[in-house]
Image (cartoon, rainbow, N blue to C red):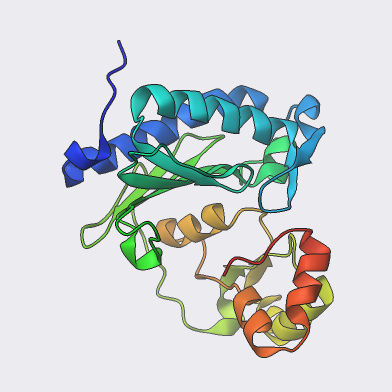
Length: 249
């Protein structure tokens, strides 16, 4: 029997364990769809303006059912559905059921379930309010969970890199939904500096890339999108043109 919980009634440890449970159960549902060509069909446009693929729609619908039975007083915010909140919500989960939809559709390992938890507070929580963050690799099942002021636990050893020499660095960046010419203009010299003695990667999932820092496989993850939008006139329109969605940062 699945027991429903109320966010406000849970202590810190129980809250992090609930987030991990939800993420792992969502991964179990998505795993059979990994590499499925049927999942590549477009299922419309998400609340953020991005394309919703069939596999995304399946994952979002299943997670909504799970949350209704397991944590009915949790609001949820996702890329495809936007904010869905019961009137008595105490907390909000920010969920990407498949961070790395395209790698998932290709059957690659760089696809994850990503879940973050914050108390609703005044109804407008920010990054500073996030208490728990969890990433579960869909293909392997490896997981990482971080609790504010308590550090990280994971199914893999934590092994941070000490590399500081750019010519020897292994690092990643992201192109999806970003104007490629503008991003390369900013990153080009760094890519050239690392391309022979180190390595640069576009892995298709920022949560997968960032957890590679925890495992020591990567030295850094570079995201220049928000600075481009803030500092370069007209760049917001370019991001909206390429990404087809809304800029939320």
